[in-house]
Amino acid sequence: MNSCIAATEALAPAKPAWRAVYSLGLGVFGLITAEFLPASLLTPMAASLGVTEGMAGQAVTATALVALVSGLLISAATKSIDRRWVLMFFSVMQILSSLLVAFAPTLEVMLIGRLLLGVAIGGFWAMSTATAMRLVPTDKIPQALAIIFSSVSIATVVAAPLGSYLGSLIGWRNVFILCILPSVLALLWQMWVLPSMKPEHSGSLGTLFKVLRRPGMAGGMLATILIFSGHFAFFTYLRPFLETVGQVSVESISLILLGFGLANFLGTSIAGHLLARNLHLTLALVPLVMGALALTMVAFGHLAVLDGVLVTLWGFAFGLVPVGWTTWLATTVPDEAESAGGLLVASIQFAIGAGAAGGGAVFDLSGANGVFTGRGLLLITAMVIVFAAVRVTPTVDNRNPQ
Image 1 (cartoon, rainbow, N blue to C red):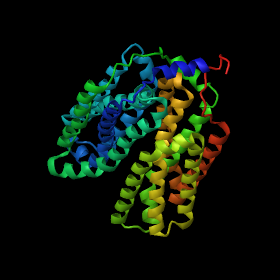
Image 2: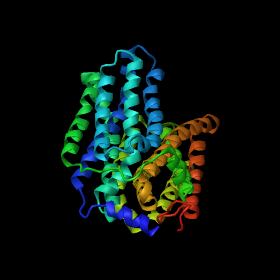
Image 3: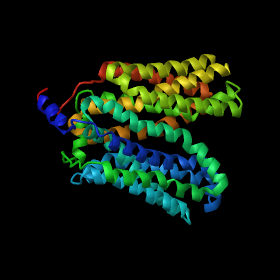
Image 4: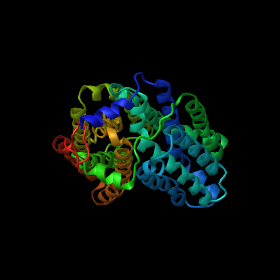
């Protein structure tokens, strides 16, 4: 294990390449903005393409499914390519994707564009941890990941409302054309500041299973699935809960969601500092807090003002989650961070689908209260798993002595 750690630390630079980190953050902003745009432009997109909104909504599904596969395969597919070129390729894919969608004459062409975006999103997230480890010293990794994930929070806050507003002014196709600007700027910036990062490990599909068999990895992936499925079920059925239980107006719901977004950005921004102090405790306490918030909303959801406070606190807590689990990968699997990143991406994409599907089934049976109760208990279960089965010290292949 000591040789594994030493080899990994040898890859870390003596000085942090913050300009490179920020260039990746800008690229992420472009990717996530493009991912979320259909949610705010679905109606005009469907009308223009001559399809139902349900069919146009497959643009989101297609992106998620391809992101899952891309996350698992990207390390093996690019094992001999300089990581600098692979990262820039993701920005190119976003540009091509948005142009295909903008000029799509049919639903089929639009879906092809969204498939390209899925490749870029899944591939980037699979490589994000390993890339951060190559750009900054080991003790700066949580801060670098916080910068990258802050771009996700910003894109989440601005993409939907800005897309909807601009779509009403210039049309949805022009919005997708504008969407290429962050990625064009990111590509140019990355060409300037990204250093050469030659692949150090020949990843393969077999490597994924070897990594999963390492001590604590299965527990970590299970906890991740529970946390992300709990979050996405909560967020998917938040509006029905606020409308039916809290009797909250549409205008107030918009303010509550804005509070969620701002708090999420704040949580992401300070995540690096909390994780540096105690990674294991932070990973465990966050799902406990989220579970407690969900159960508190079930008990006192009729109080609209309290709902707003609880949703804001949820946004802050969830801001720690992506940074926390990617930092966990960098800490526990430093020698196979790309393969482990692929497993994490697949777990999250699976959790999104499971959270939406499972939440929908529970919602039909027992309403939003049932969804929040069930997901609250799942999140508390995740906390138990983190304490009992997740390690935060480096692990090596089970065939090697520890």
